Length: 279
Ligand SMILES: Nc1ncnc2c1ncn2[C@@H]1O[C@H](COP(=O)(O)OP(=O)(O)OP(=O)(O)O)[C@@H](O)[C@H]1O
Ligand SMILES: [Mg+2]
Image 1 (tube, rainbow, N blue to C red):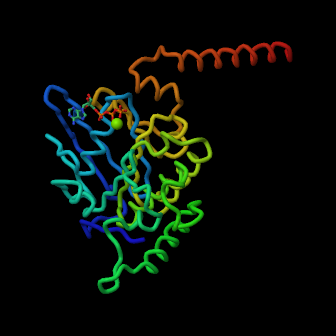
Image 2 (image 1 turned 60 degrees about the horizontal axis):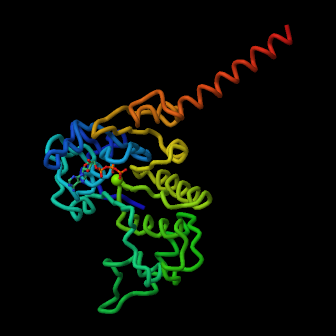
Image 3 (image 1 turned 120 degrees about the horizontal axis):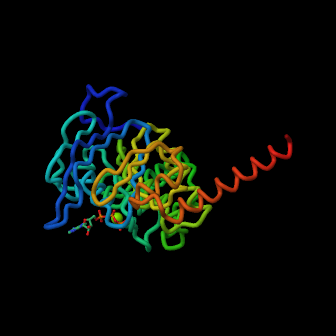
């Protein structure tokens, strides 16, 4: 899969996306203040934060749904100005919103090609669309039993897979996923996380919003914590959960840190006693 490049001079080291001091205000609410972030090729960045922290607003700005009030957005090192979601898509930014926007009564192929149907002459080229659908789902190792199954009869994980596959048809360079595992069970979550890995392996940049720290730690290369619209730290995937939770909540004395401290203390006591016995 090739990717559209706005800047032919952009080399592998140039981030796909760079935000510099991005601000967004809704009336009296300062939803985002001075957000700086970069996403490289084949990199997964997770966006975490409490309700109202500004995650969706940030994703919508990158997706061209909202316009930022201040700061800069660069794609492949070139300043980008999105007047609407169409501009962002054109520039290679694909977004899978939480509601997925799939048509339940249509089958997988029809959903994948909704609004961008392949035609031969004036007729729909059903065979070509089916072929391309199988190819894409196979490349993603997606577990979809048939491309002629209506979306209504797919599981939550399979629907998420179809929505992500659809966004890949536009050959994006950056994909934004808003809570892709929020409504999924354990096995389906694992499938979607595997899918994210495969997208990363294709060299795309991924920004994923999640409330689930285990998912984030499993799949992200870096984690941006938003708190009250501000950057409250960028962490790597090995960061302990309690550090992330403390950054998210702004408190280091919450139940998660208290529990981890108890576990650590118990481990220390055990080590001390067993060493004592050995001595
Ligand atoms: N269209 C809007 N008009 C006015 N205020 C808005 C709008 N969208 C978001 N906000 C406000 O901006 C802040 C950030 O909201 P946002 O939806 O980005 O949070 P979030 O981190 O995605 O939260 P959640 O985890 O609940 O989805 C909130 O205070 C919210 O009320
Ligand atoms: Mg949100």
